[in-house]
Length: 128
Image (cartoon, rainbow, N blue to C red; front, side, top):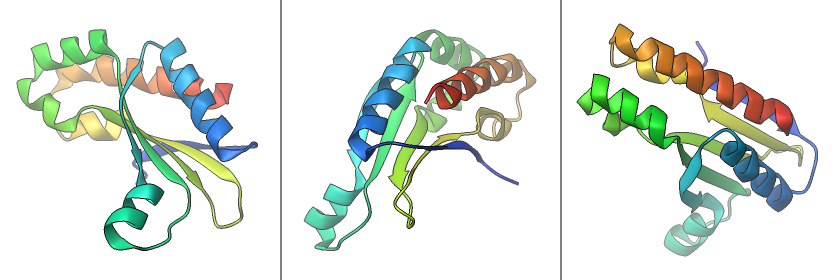
């Protein structure tokens, strides 16, 4: 079973990252962290890796609702969206599947929140 939703995107890597961040913002998400995996591996391991960014996205209102229903949900936040260069040289944007993520909590009160986040992520990906 898959744990992400994804879209292949035409364009230059940094432009796709910027478009992804803007699309997340349009859907009410802020990017709390931006991890450059390629740079981190180069610095910490002295190893080469493809362009790969992890964007920690959070919608404050939905996070608040989720934490009200399940205080331990914070261990699963923020929701990660990744942008990476494929071996073929194209760019893929992939987001965690909120239904799979929230399913870990086994709390049906979180289902409407997961559905809302899922719909927003689908719109983000399709807008790219």
